[in-house]
Length: 388
Image (cartoon, rainbow, N blue to C red; front, side):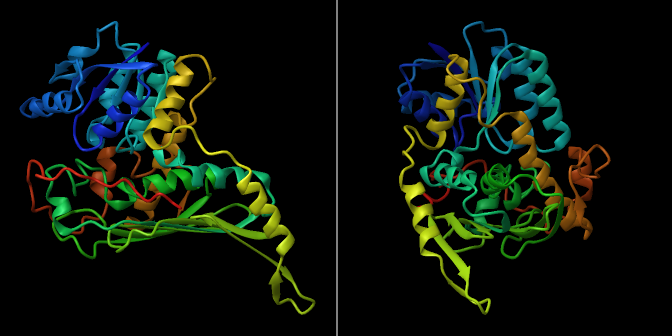
């Protein structure tokens, strides 16, 4: 039985708690912690709401020496992820960190070093990989039936009201690390580079159109270039009504997407298109033959981590290096949009955005944060579309 602790009992923590409870034959939650002593009652409420028999802490450092904790879920604001994860890795615990991995590439590198030195598991939440549409699309892309990818369209469309950024830790680079590019599009950017690999160059523009109570962007558009000449466009937004999220991959032979759609064209003698029904049927048949996942979203990823700890798998699907790649792409978008210059990848210590201090200094501040409320009376959150 794998013993679990959860650090941070805010809005995302219930997703972890429910997932662990769904897998209760393999794991047990033994401790909860809220890192802000004045908010410790949140942990007590979570324990009561989910009928948990757990120890409750207001300082994660008090838990480091507990020998009965095997796995720690870090569900705190992004600027705290690195310190907490490193402390637990150094204490010999396996760690699962909510997205985004950290607020800088420097912190990501420090977390990876701690993981390598400890030999423990470090995984970064990327729960949208564990959906049937995304896993199936990845499998279809791996068949190469589409031919080389020539263009990708990533629409990370969300909508958040003005008051969303009134929450005390949102809307500043210091506490949240960035705006929608980091904290919303992180899901789609993770899936994008998982499916299509890392680009070699990024150009971007960011703006704040509707949230003058936040320093950060609420809309960005990035263009990615690959060494083979293919392009990708990524739109990150919290101003799109309907939150219609999609990834479209245009190959030389066919187009596929989430939500699932397949279209294939072949050339007439004059160069104009006609439907390639044979290829469409082949791609559709391949898609329909793929089995559904046993577990999805957070439960799917936690199952993946537990399977590694149980010795059923060699490594997790999303490790620290994979999590860093997502932050690297996002960092490049911030650097390109703030400096007005294209950015070459990979980034290293010479990037002005490599450190958290560098990002704070160089990122475009659109407005001053004005709202500062402790919590909302309604803590209901949404975590993206079903992609179906």
